[in-house]
Length: 195
Image (cartoon, rainbow, N blue to C red):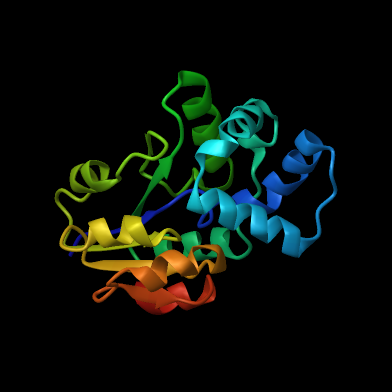
């Protein structure tokens, strides 16, 4: 049986929001509490367009290409690999050569010795086509993302869509019919789906 585990980038393999906070504080000239930063994130998720200028600022920052790994995820990736899974990443980033290269290098830095491919879709672009292209030839496919909408479109494409619970995306999750999608409360919960 050929097995594949597909990971999202931001929020699953890489700690986007934690690293982005200091860049946002620099951009706005304001120090934020954790609660204030959470409100900014949720406001962005409701309507990203007012944050477009900050998005360009963040993309140009050195932080963009140097996001740290999500705690425990390098070990989980190693575990999935040791269990016979091929590993791939489908991540959303603007389709400029510079940003794709920086994002890919960032992922390869922590996970590269185990991955078969890193696919960068455009930002705010559906991952459906990338998923369809990536799964060919596999019998069992796990797909882990922290954004519920990506998991909704993956139903019927992958064997097991898994939401790595993200409290910022809870309001999205609550509005969607999410039957057929498994939930992992933490990175360590993902081990149960690998076995």
